[in-house]
Image (cartoon, rainbow, N blue to C red; front, side, top):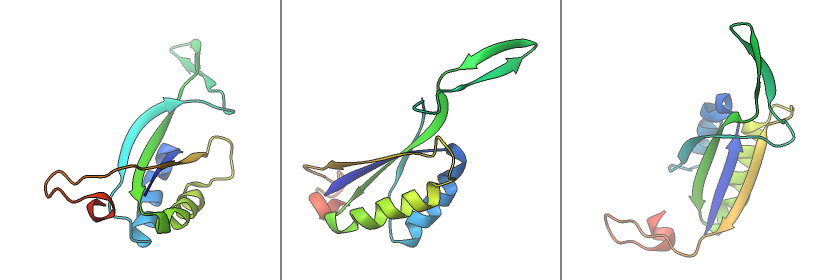
Length: 112
């Protein structure tokens, strides 16, 4: 089992969610986060004062999948989240040691 973590632009969330639903993914955790990489933030003007926005809003998605779904999920997210511009985000894949469905006590892939 793997945990796929994607950090994407907020306006791409619905598109990514729909694309994942299209490949059979039913469970996603989404969190609003802030960060920066090569994009480095930008300057904005507020009431005549200029200020620097260092951390940009992003959405972090966490999807637990079986080993056989990892490539499909990462390719689907990469395609749906792509704008071709800097700041599109990153994908991370982690090994999951154990998954337990609290309600039923199911374990591992049965709990997904």
